[in-house]
Image (cartoon, rainbow, N blue to C red):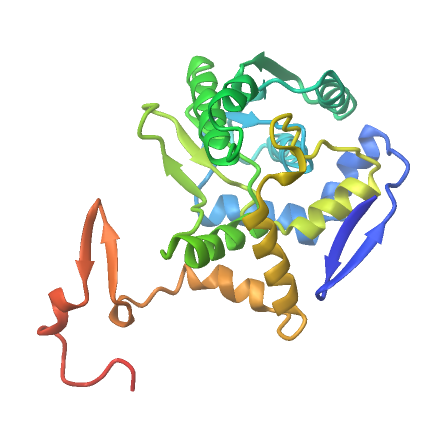
Amino acid sequence: MSGIAGSGCEVVIPLGERKTLKEIERSITKTYKKHIWTRFNKAINDFKLVQDGDKIAVALSGGKDSLLMAKLFQELKRHGKIQFELEFIAMDPGYYDSNRTMLMNNCKHLDIPVQIFETDIFEVIDDIASDYPCYLCARMRRGHLYAKAQELECNKLALGHHFDDVIETTMLNMLYAGSFKTMRPKLKSKNFKGVELIRPMYYVKEDDIKRFTSSNGIMAMNCGCVVAAQKTSSKRREVKQLIKALKKNFNDVDKCIFQSAQNVNLNSVLGWEKGGKKYSFLDFYEEESEQSFEE
């Protein structure tokens, strides 16, 4: 079963009968054209995520987000408007055999030529950070994916973060870290020269990904973590529930959270950081006009 949130209510829909590859691919540009395909293309165009000559490593975790992202990239390449190459990579951090088998079977059915490589991340995390594994695990995963992309001579690494990941990260930083930071659609790696991370699902909402997965009968992996299982990411779940509750009274609250990171008014904040240097509004206070910015 998959939970679908709509207008603040939890709607549960059954996993449908698994569709054929042709039906799944057709649904991307037909049934889900407005909510998935168009938004995928919009992010690519708005943020210049894919350009002629790119070689992109598409990272597959086995979850619903990355499986859809892989199919979207294949569809984009088929359209031929941008000339680029693809490498599909999946890191096995120590999955149970059942999860690895599910990943391989899904990729086979979806015609995704994935390269799976092994690491011992789960084993390492269990030894040194079993109480709070998620942050370190994410950093280690990212490092291995960057390294594999570089090994394959890719200049870009694509991750399946979506709209809801962006707004939840924004809220997590505000509520639990006391800072205003969001998840950018692309960034250059500091440690892996020549590799840029991109997030082409930036505008795609999680509910629509769930609908696509369920209606096409795709049984995707969840976290797959063998260290923390159900106790991981509790803060993110809290924020997800908070946003859902807020949407009951204001349905566009998620859009406003998303847009807030694009509408930062430096004249109305106490401080900010750029290039590793911190600034205070007091540094520029005497230069301001007498007219209040809050009027």
